[in-house]
Image 1 (spheres, rainbow, N blue to C red):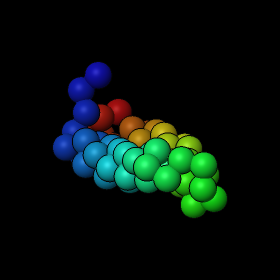
Image 2: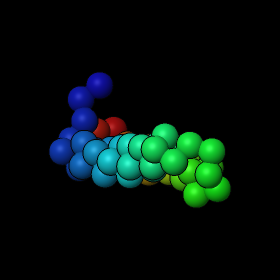
Image 3: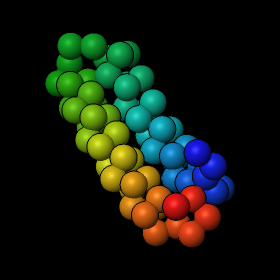
Image 4: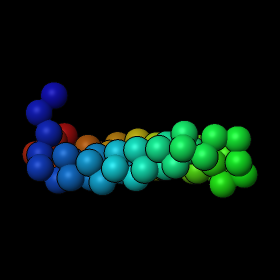
Length: 63
C-alpha cells in the first residue's frame, strides 16, 4: 500500500509518543506512574489507529 508523506508524519509522531511512554513504564517498572504510562501507551496506540484510518478515508493520495 502506497501512502503519502502526511501518513508517515502522523504515524511517526504517534510512534514517538508510544515509545516514550513504554520506555518510561519499563524504567520505572512496578510504580504507579509506570502503570499509568503503560495504560496511556495503549490508549495512544488506539488513537493512532483511529487517526490513520481517518486519514486513509479522506486522503486522495492514500485512499
